[in-house]
Image (cartoon, rainbow, N blue to C red; front, side, top):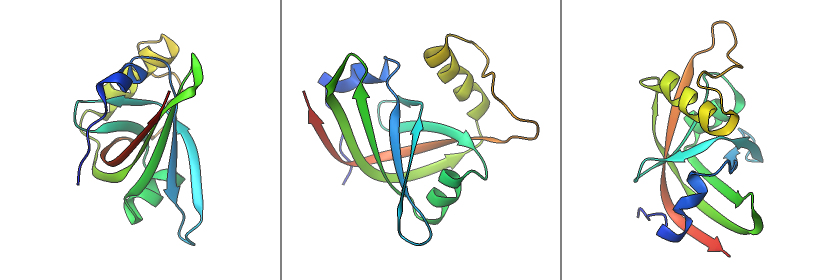
Length: 132
């Protein structure tokens, strides 16, 4: 069952707050990666390149967890467990540029690799917990 993000924590998506994304490796072990995140009002979104470990893990098993810690108060955080319900290349280049502006102050993502295919992942929150 989908849950919404409490209004009191929506500000975390406006700050340069990294999300720590947990995915599941093929052997069942956890894998955690810091990611840039935003929220479209329904889904928490992150962006990656096709073929990376998190991409492979999410395509195989869409269950994820995400912890977003307030950079101004590390005792305030938003925890999300849910599923990636959409993986798309559509709008992914624009999305990574928007995230680059937010996190780096640069309008174009500067770390693109030759031949890289960007992808947007949409997480439907199923369980939300907060602190602070």
